[in-house]
Length: 150
Image (cartoon, rainbow, N blue to C red):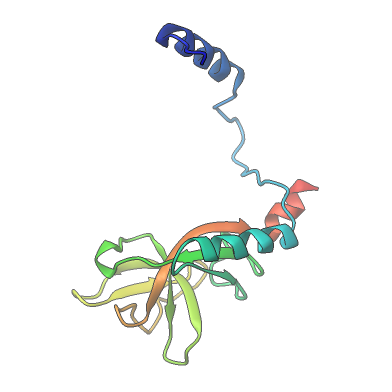
């Protein structure tokens, strides 16, 4: 078995990091060129590997420009006590529709106020222990990534 000394590993790591550009002069976000079908397949694997997680596809405009229509996401269960302002969570509204919005503030000890970042108003319904589905865990595909990858 080959064992490297700490100074040798440190030297190699320094060389590697010097070759990586860790600063950016641009304000644009880059995306990996993954197509919708590839992302969907990955999402199916993830949702089964992580108990309680589920894959979803966004359909509205309330979270644009961050989440556009047809964005493939993974939502993962989270304890109600672990929620924090700024988290994007999924919850079921009174019509049984899944909503994915950002938490903006507490509404007492048993509820949160959520809002789509592209919406002018906060959601009328509150996020509660009963209707909370989970927190946005990752984005697997966004239409913007295909446009920028071309």
